[in-house]
Image 1 (tube, rainbow, N blue to C red):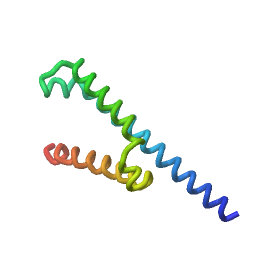
Image 2: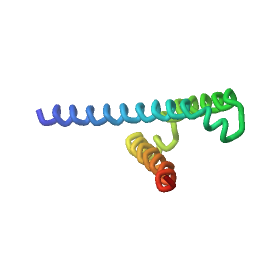
Image 3: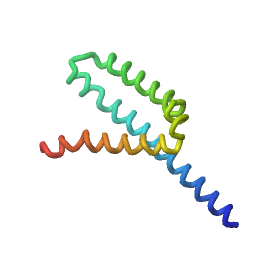
Length: 102
């Protein structure tokens, strides 16, 4: 009985982690696609070139997120947790100079 309960909680935690990683990838994609006109204007480039670059980035992200060497070396759980921490930390760090300027 105790093993079944522990197994259930472990599966629920894994499900939440996978769901949160998928959500963050989709959020990243939607933010990038929304910001393409502003980014292309700031970089003085064509919107269509930026869309191609974003598509290549998202394709590389989708391919590499589950087949990486660090998953084999560190383990999948540690790699995903580190990726979540890195994504969250870099997002907060990117936004903090903008908040202090306004």
